[in-house]
Image (cartoon, rainbow, N blue to C red; front, side, top):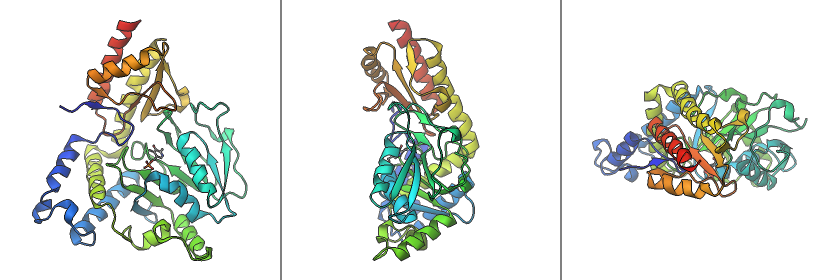
Length: 365
Ligand SMILES: *Cc1c(COP(=O)(O)O)cnc(C)c1O
């Protein structure tokens, strides 16, 4: 039997998708070859990657003149690639620091440009996200980078920042979980392993501005950009400069098909609101629990909390695990508890968790 899986990532996938992957492995669509044994230059794979692009465009209403790439290296490589492709060594990009991932984005950008951190929390707790009134852009910056959902802390921007520069969004842990205005972004990137499939594929959306910047930086940089780190080259090659993660792209395509079958982003957004509300309600209902994130910054994807009596936290994790509820221990940098409830986490899992929490509270208060 499968457990209720609340792991932060790689995370739960729909059972129906896993079945499809399983069936594709030995003999893909009766071609006589398994999915992982096909050339990435074959017509069969071409159809897979084209369909994946098309579905993502439909799901996120990606403007026609934007590019959709499937790369490798995870979101972590995008920390570097965004700065490398959009900035010269003396150019500056603005960064909002809402936690571990933003901190890493700034660190990587420093290797090749002049990032400016324009907001970080007054205390190091990272339990909130800022609004436009809380920061000021640097006049000469080329973009504003933000992490839309902070996986570790359980905070999320409740809306897209309204600024007069292109946005760079790390949406690794909330892409396709809610509607987003792609046109405000120069780049959106996301490792697939939270909301889009297995690890090993990174979705990158590029505006025409971002592609042009990449071409320009490539032209002025001595020797040009390294091929594998060059957005404009990846665009020209349709993500097939070298061998991509063919299995991962197929899995992502099936995840997107599953999401479209459910009714798309607007439908999953309703379900995500319902799931997270159930958890925040129980957390708000008594002093037994202590929700971690500030109310206006609460994440619909990663719900984080503590127990007022911290000695009960390890008991909670242990007993939850024995009850078939997996992956509830908070990230080591925050402690406490965390339930990651991405798109593919079924309502039944959240119901089971809420039931367990009620019982746990009754037993221990
Ligand atoms: C998981 C995560 C990352 C790191 O992703 P990798 O694919 O492991 O590089 C970066 N940013 C956010 C918001 C994440 O949730």
